[in-house]
Amino acid sequence: MDNTGVKELIDFIAVRSESEEHWSGFLFDLYERGLKGKRLKLIIVDGGKGLAKALDDIYTRVLRQRCWAHKLRNVATYLRKKDEEACLAGAKAIYGAKCLKHAKKKFRTWKMRWEKLYPEAIACLENDMDEMLAFFLFDARQWRKLRTTNPIERVFREFRRRTDVMGNHMTSMNSCEKIFYVITEFLNERWRTRRYLYFKEIELIPTNIPKRNAA
Image 1 (cartoon, one colour):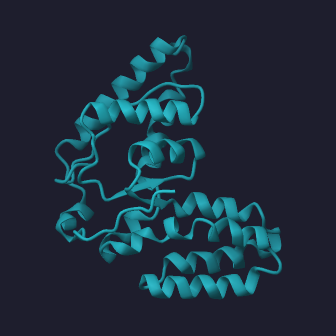
Image 2 (cartoon, helix red, strand yellow):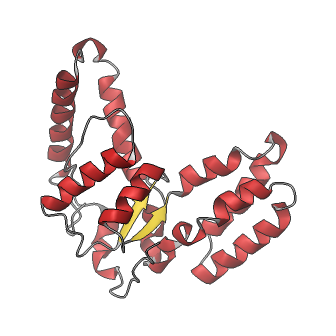
């Protein structure tokens, strides 16, 4: 998404895993082609370790927002079925808070209720709390779009929907890449004349967003 609100897929790569090596090569290529990140304020990630390590090397000081949808699925793996709905509802209340201060308060309340029963679930969220709450530093009208990777996940679903019926045509990596290229061009053309609503408030992005503390 550029600063006028136009969405665009700028690259893809076919690899066998999301390793640090593959992510580093992909991101470094983007960097060398001009994506220096000078105006980059936030990177929204799903929690994959390979991507996180690659970002440490290339966009070290850019704030990160961890995807709440992915994180809550991780939390759920530590819960018994009978407590899952109630525990996750309490966790969701954290990102539904009216400000950063209240979000931290709701986390403490959630932690006090569930820590004895599910210490690993609490730690799963608490260990990444700074990255879970980064979206609160932006304008409230943008929070819903910034707290998950849903926009790119919808793109992935579109790729799967179109390729699921093309199995016989993807006989090699080369044919797979050709099909992905055609789909990418189709999506970019469809988006080219659209402006996505929440980027009408692009000027609301604060100019004083802090830098990420490098590990």
